[in-house]
Image (cartoon, rainbow, N blue to C red; front, side):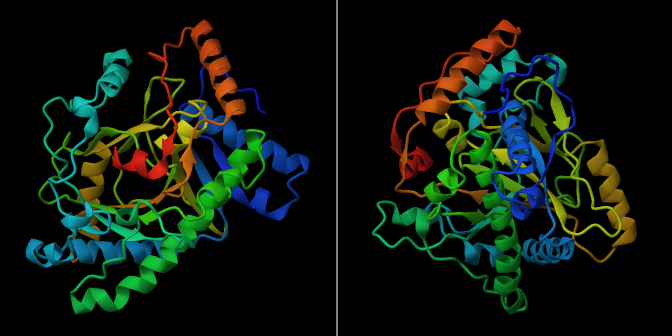
Length: 381
């Protein structure tokens, strides 16, 4: 188990973890053990990290972004054909001004904001209406060999109706989704090893999870003014979230042990370097299973100065392309029927970290009780 409470002030740069080290060496090797410990420490300290995977193609991400820009540039009445509100929008498209940031009315979340220094707080969400972003959910899960108690969380995919989109859709979504799923599954194994567990602890728990390729889309022609909130301050309810690079900046994260807002920039590979860099964030299922040893990472997406500059550059350089900010996002879930309860050894470590942080003057607010429940119940809460 790594040294979990870091006494010195953590860097404002997210740690970069190399999945290739894990994939290319025995788990028992010192190189793998060290890199897995770094991965666990990064999730505990920051709730986020940057992951490098030489198998993930930059060009696949670009193809994915092109497709989603074209899809969300369609008229709203065309997009609406792909809505499934009767399934709680768990597959298909969700149009803008539908998703509401829970934090605006959630006391523990508001308490987190209150404890931040004023200069480090997110843009004001107290009067924020539903997010002006759209979303598409594309399932990437493996069918369970048993009858799930949560069929609504495991519904069939929706393929868009428009012919020019439909013929490209499934191959592009599956190619990019499989790359993201493989990368984040590898990171889940590394985190387990780094926390003193067997490598398959988390991946076995998520074998039949309702994993989602879940891009969001924000129309920057309509919502491109500085300080527009595209996705209000929130955490993700799944286990791990992984992102490819977006074409437009604007994502801010808050590291657990800094209390500071970090503008996320995903590095580009060096010339001749294989693979891609990806952002990974901890979600509520990981927080629950570790008894709070890892905290779900808070984040927001806003239009900032860098977003405005990028819009201007894209307008000049790609005049025929839609000005739509696509997030290249994948939600990795635990299986819906999995019994979600803190792992005792990790819960003990969580209490030790909380006490150490308190001694270092880091106020983490009230202690959270993680009640046993099915993962599907946690998702539907």
